[in-house]
Image (cartoon, rainbow, N blue to C red; front, side):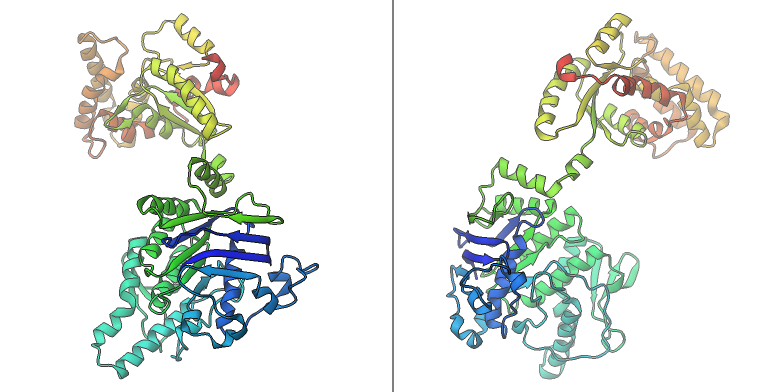
Length: 553
């Protein structure tokens, strides 16, 4: 079942809405837009349309009509309203609304709808009851604001079907036990990785689903997290229903509920990859994880995915909507919808550009600064840009980029002292740049105070003199190699090896840079004089004299 057009008049949010030109090849339709933009209203229209074949409609004027005070002149009841809900399929002729009670199974399976109110925290079954035809979909939500609890119902279906097959077929018992949980369990592992579905347990002894999670071999459904229950609910229901709903438009309102972004993406991938070929999946979302995965699926299989953009639409007017052109402007706009104020929340308030070329440890200086100041300055991030000249030159470029992508982020920079005289330092500060008071970052990390603290935290206070002596010896050796007398960077490798030997250190970092990041940086804490000195070097200008880096450069 593949939808081609949707035409609604006087329905919920819409004065008149025409969605058209959905290609027959499309397997996934993604409705995107902020809360209250009308996405769920589309599913309500499908749900009302589905009432043709589900034993009668539920009509609620204040809910279904654009206005219950002044409804469209031609809409007095459900029968009038259904005439204004017109859906055209690529491969299916709409039912005759005059004979809706005579519809066949193909009409019953036209849609399968899940509302966003999916939450069944716990259930316990003590008896088995035979369920009606799955195509009757007795538990479906009558409105998109209705509770949609399917887990316990699906449990009953699994158990009842197993009993029927045990006594009504010659299938092996093991096959009967494993068949209903095999694909669901495999899919659940792909989504979460650490959860294994064991089975339905004993339905006569507080029957519920049992799982294996970590060391627990009998983890019950009620103990799953909210996100695990949400994903299990959708996967369980999906795999049990696609056997009969094999020519269907599946609709899920906000499939990402209770899930973090990576799990949202994996869940969507599972649903799409297992969707029967004749089916179509419609989802309504404003989740960045779901939309990102939909984008990946669209790029991997052109023609399989379309996006319907509900953002910034005036539905008090006639609106014609076609699949969105997925260019950069579109992605930027829907990303803003997905993130909203979160973009400002997760974006740092200040970015400090520092020295440090990419190495085996990555951007060394930036990593060290982040770890040192992450507690006191959580809204500041650091980025290594290379040498001092590159820091100065590239800061302007980065500032321009940030102005386009993230507004309101302050940009500043800091460079090593190196061999700069005081006049050079003063000149850089006039430009709004900050300069470390010591030659390199290593001068702070290998300072005597930090080395003494290292001995203390390793409970080797008696080795302090030996460690400080090794530091002096490594520096003297560096000076003999004609390095400056304060070049701690040049002596760091020799001192790293000496410290490991003297203190018997293991798992402290495989080289001197990793040693700094993993072992020394955690020792640079606010009560130390080195921390205070480094803090003053980096933040004193930005805190007291904010510099406009664009103008100063």
